[in-house]
Image: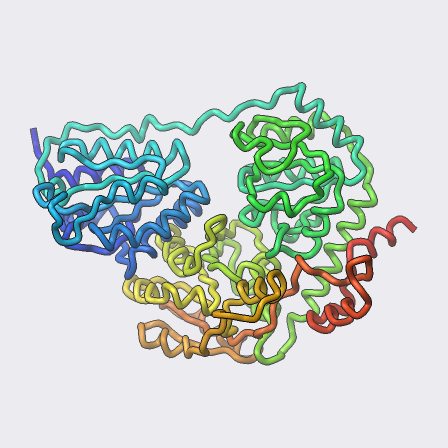
Length: 580
């Protein structure tokens, strides 16, 4: 029987499962792994990142974008530890990732050798499955099991491989189980619970749909329920794009990064149809007195974030279709009509700034240009910070566009590695990374990765010289003196040029339009440094658009001046309009 190096045999298992890309940075302890990657260079694409954290983030992002397992690796000691941040992103966003961790040779383990640490305990918390190879022969089966566990638990599976085992030649007699893998059969909705849910919906005066990433395959059914029962929709942040942003009944997401109409609808309803949603902040984002119908495929999620009146353990697509079939068409409520007017008012207000040429630039004209340059198949890698706010409010997702960010873990530095993953997985699509100057600085060395692999990615850096998200928290939430949030101005275009990319600095709307035209024609990585306003985005957590027992006219006047909200009305204004 023929023999093969154990590390190579392991990579062949990854390939059998459909893995196309592997992200990482070599180290001495991973020499046998690199030999295997070289041997499989025609069938497995290796992406040499410049920091292991970026490799782990890229693997997580690829899994989010494709739905297939992402793979990363790190060498013993520091290389392994560097992976943790990206792996925690995968854990928190329930993403299947396999991490291959190198270890020193077995005879050097546990004797205080160079870069030798007890690695397995380090990965216990981040992983759903975490094992160290005890024989070379076990490596192919362990890779197979790691992928199975990553898919089963939607999380991180870790395989630690001593260097000498990777070199060892083993017999080729293991058969991967990839061809046997099947998606689990989703639970069918209980008809009695569908009946109970319909009873609540038909008697509600202000019913709302609040959906999460668990409804990602149910766009058609969400719309059917929304239209038949006249229920406006809001979503979690990560669910943006499931329903196109232009869809009239979709008010956007809710929470701090959300547009105003979604935030107001979250508190103005009396019934919430909660679909595939596990947002940890939900208790702060919706009316605590509202009745709740929750749909989820995981029983552990039912009632986890809020009290629930009717719990439906079922696939979102099936449950929503059952509800649509069960119910009869309902009339438009005042809540529905006011919510749609509120949505249009918000969109008109934002659109009023798209030709604004203030310096530094406002976000509206910048994101308007990004909307115009992005194709219907564009992919966005979005960093963490104020860029999340502007992306959620100003990018109009449609067509077959995709996007990814670090959701529950919210790690800065995510944007560029995510874009690298997007371009690696979808080389024929236009790809954009969107980052603030704080997040970009954390992993900006990955521009070298883009240059090395000729990845035609357009990287936007929004330079406002502050950690804006944290500045807003210190100012609005804790009301403390600003501390540690100021950033120095940086010539990011020159940095990009030094790394081999096309660098462009933008200060005016005319320069922005010219930069967009140049970037679209480029055949190499592009870095566009947009000098953006230091002014914070409109806050939905501390709105002062009308007087009440908490807000004086002076507060309203100050808020209007600060955020230029002339012409922007609160939800109550539209409710009064439709009830006249």
